[in-house]
Amino acid sequence: MSDKKILLRQLPKIDLVVDDLNPEDISGVPPAIYKSAVRKTIESFRRGILAGKISRLPQGKEEWNVIFSAAIDKKNSPNLQRVLNGTGVVIHTNLGRSLLGQDTIQSLQVAGAHYTNLEFDLETGKRGSRYGLVEEIICDLTGAEAALVVNNNAAAVLLALNTLASGKETIVSRGQLVEIGGSFRIPDIMTRSGAILVEVGATNRTHLFDYENGISEETALLLKVHTSNFRVIGFTSEVSAAELVALGKEHDLPVMEDLGSGSLVDLSPWGLPKEPTVQEIVKAGVDVVTFSGDKLLGGPQAGLLVGKRDIINRIKKNPMNRALRIDKFTLASLESVLRNYYDLEKALDQVPTLALLTVSPEIIKKKGQKILRRLGGAGEVKEWIQLLPTVSKVGGGAMPEHGLASWSLVLQPGQDGASELERWLRTLPVPLIGRIEEEKMVLDLRTILDDDLPLLLEILQRYLERKQAT
Ligand SMILES: *Cc1c(COP(=O)(O)O)cnc(C)c1O
Image 1 (tube, rainbow, N blue to C red):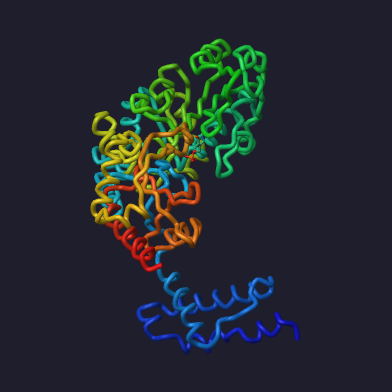
Image 2 (image 1 turned 45 degrees about the horizontal axis):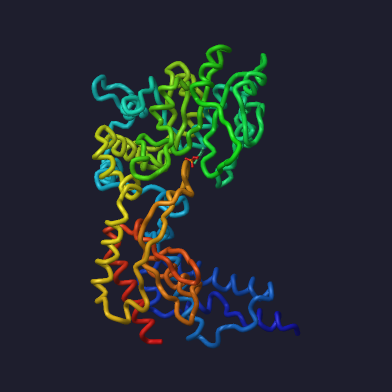
């Protein structure tokens, strides 16, 4: 008999295991959960054996039950977990992009626990529009005539293209046919929208005459796309929104711009790149501008469309809009976040994404000093944990690679190596995600929130204890 067959025969039988689990491992756990955990565990051993990856099985009930206990515990815990972000990437798509401030959390609480006037006009007693709750605010803040919010910016682009250019040609610069990540590619989304892509210009340079030469009887739209996570440097040239608008007017064609991040605030005074704000693009006369809710705006996942009233009205009437609509939680939190922007000081303070992007390196350094003091600051602490300058990244959207001066705690991995330390931190009850640099673990303090500090201290204490034990 082959080794694989012998191992397969040695796998425990599900029913017998289930009858013989440690009572403390299943107390309060629904049978459906622990049965499934046992079945999945044995199945994964079976797959491992068949793939030749497992050549030794746990020995005896004790050893197996340790494994089943961990599997049951994991299955009985929430899958979506809080983590500490030590990466320094403020808008981290994999870690949930933007955080919401306390007032905004409060609005979610209300929307979830109570009936609301989501689609009920309290003045007339008749049915209302959910978009009415935020449209005026968005218009106030951006200067646009009308606005609409959908599931995310990818949906906003799809909906706008489908409404304005299905079966017709849309002109885009070759330099802007980008992939944003998470399989959002401009050419693919255009195909799905029914719009026919007409590429003009070259990868590095596109001129106004390129767009002009691309216009035909079949043209329905001129599109400009923010290249976000991609930069062409050196000999480059791009047509501005204002120039495109002038060309559009001449030919009676609408102009659309996918801004991606879509900041309402010029962040250049805080050392970030000068990016056109949504207000500036609207003012340039672009007919429809799309941007994300959870990038630089710092709100919930959403896609905002702002622009000329007749165009936005056409988009609103597209039946696809219903399939892409936002829920009450998005509306509640978006309204709350947007209200902060009526007062810039308030926005910088209350919108966590803006606060994290604009906090000064000195304040971040003080946070590090405070942590070291709490740890006791003794010789062995300094040996294992150092406070050193680092560079944080903005993340998702317009300026993902832009560096911001920051401070980090640098952890020495010791003999186990940096990847083992990284794994240990990542598998803690509240995981701590950092980055490895030059075989050391770097924890950028920019994205460690004040609320996270007690937990971080606890983790660092455990880390020091482990070090001292070795
Ligand atoms: C991020 C981005 C998108 C996708 O936005 P989501 O809100 O993630 O759907 C589309 N276009 C550009 C230019 C982007 O930067």
